[in-house]
Length: 392
Image 1 (cartoon, helix red, strand yellow):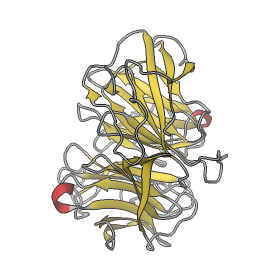
Image 2 (cartoon, rainbow, N blue to C red; image 1 turned 45 degrees about the vertical axis):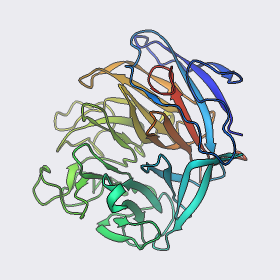
Image 3 (tube, rainbow, N blue to C red; image 1 turned 120 degrees about the vertical axis):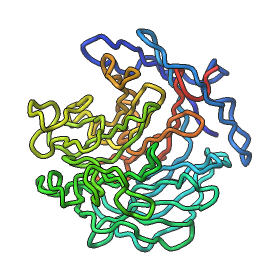
C-alpha cells in the first residue's frame, strides 16, 4: 500500500534563519487536506482536486502530507506529465523512459518501461536527462529529450517507441556538469539548460552553448526575441543548471549547482550574466546578476525547481533537502527560506508540479555519493496545506 504521513513546518519568515521540520505524524485517519484513503490495487489513484486558494501569509504552520508513489528506480532524472495525469520519468544511467501511473498497484503507482534508448551514453552525470511534453501533445504526441553521446549533449524530439530525431547538437559534454533540463515556457518556446564542464571558459563565452540557458523553437532553431538574433542563448554565466520553472507572473526561476562554495536559486531575465566563474552568490559587480537566494554548497547543490502559487521550491542533492522560498506578487523574496525533508530521503533531484497541484520529487541515491535505502530510488508526492492539491 502507498504509505502516507504528515509533516508540520513552522513558518517564521522574519527570523534570522530558517526552521527545520516540526512534528511528524502518521496519517492513520482522514485529515482536512492531503491524500485520500488508500487506493484499491489496480484502480486509478484517487488523487485529490487542486485548491486555488492563495498561500498563507505571515506566521503559522505549513503542513505537508507525504506519499511514496513509486520505488525501486535507478537515478530518476527528468519528469514530465502527460494529459492523462501520468508522468514520464527518465533514468539517467539506464536510458529508460518510464511511465508512472495513472494506474496503481499494491506498491503505489504502476511503473512501466515504455522505451530504452540505445543512442544514450551514460557516465558521470551524463546520460538520459531532461524530458518535456509538447504543449500540443494531444495532437502531435511529441516529446523532447536531452541526452549525452560520446561527443556531445543534444536535444531530440521523439514519439514514444520511435527513433529520436536530434534538433540541437554540439552542447558541450563533460563528466560532471551537463545541465540537461528541458521545459516549455509560458511563451511556448523550449528552454534548455546546459553545464560548463570546464574551469569556467564556456559559461561567459557567447559562442559556446555551455553554461547557458538556451531558448529554441521545437525545430531546434533560435527562438524569435532572443537577446542576440540567430543565437539560442537566453542567459549565461551558469555553472550547471538542472532545474527551471515559471510562476503565474511568467517569471523564470533556475537552480545553480556544482559551484565550489555556493548554491543558488536565480530569477532569470533575458540576456543576463549570472557570474560563473567570476563570482558565486552575492557580488558587487553590476555586470553580473545576483541570486534571489543562496546557500552554502553543502546545504544545497540543488537540481529540480517547481512553483506552487507564490512558493518556489528546489530539490537538493548535496544538501539532501527541499528548500522553499516565498515571494511577493512581483517576485520579491519574503522572509527566510524554509527547509523540508532534511536528511530524510537522501539526495533529492527531480522536482515537478503535478497537474493536481501537488509536488513530485525524486531521490537520487543509486549513484556516486548516495547511500541507497532498500526502496531507492523513490518518487515522493508532497501536498501542502496552504496551497495546491488536496486541501479542503
